[in-house]
Image (cartoon, rainbow, N blue to C red; front, side, top):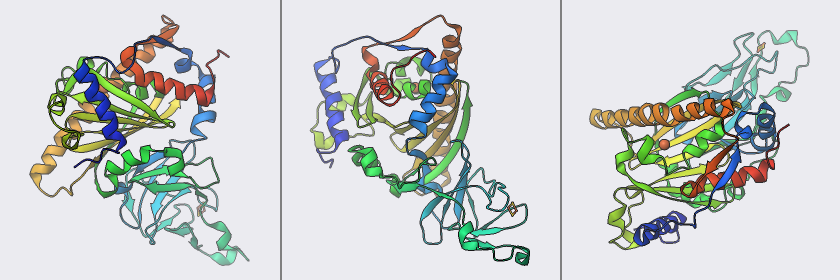
Length: 387
Ligand code: FES
Ligand SMILES: [Fe+2]
């Protein structure tokens, strides 16, 4: 049974109401967004300062690194990071930088498991908690205080099955304050009790915001995706609501009709619709019927984005049959839908924006999630001005 105070249920109720009354959520209106926001390198630097240096960023999911010694690196926030689970079970984030001569300590581009981190250059060695525990020929460093040469730690918080880091801050992340009531959604998505299935990294020649907007846009689903997953969805039926700096979002699946004839306790949130929440600033959580996609968009420049997609499942996959099922699902969503359709049109849009043919985007009534995203952008960055 689903608790009705669950904000996901409330939003789903809005969607059901839209279907029942055959009317949109809001009175329609058109708004505009200047294309310079997507093409101007100086605006990109401004966004980097005002958004990415100020916000906790989701660097992955807990189920990637379940055991002590599990670790991975991340270079996508302008600082080389090493994220590792200690013997005490706590996850920490360090600068991936040896304290001797600054060499990159780990080159794990996938998750690996180790007992210690040994620098390749002179083999200074650190434990999983970041303490310097071994210096070869230590007599060459009289009075060296190893206690002062632990790896440099940056704020990390692990909660609701997700990992946030904030490499440009010294203070602890207050994640519940940052998330507001969207913590209820994250909690109920059940990621803390889930399993990692697969990861893929994509590089796209398109501004990061184009990607975020594509996942807040129910208008394209049955059109762009008409050869892949479009047939699973109702046409143009999506609702979004802002929660602090995040956006709670759901797109109706064809099965939404069933929800019209049953009580709210019987609504099936994962089969009657698909959530596509924006966790500010650059992660989208897509809740598919039997798995979750966590997609984080890392800006590289005003026209380049690196995208990491983690697929998370709710069962510990043992059988070949289940593996085959999720393997096919991953290929369909990661390549067939995201890369070949969503990311592809974002790249096509970037080419169009650079041409100068349009001075503004025209955002219509069915693109309310994009409008909400722009409200948040405006609050963080101020109005776009050509510089
Ligand atoms: S730079 Fe790492 S041990 Fe020398
Ligand atoms: Fe899409």
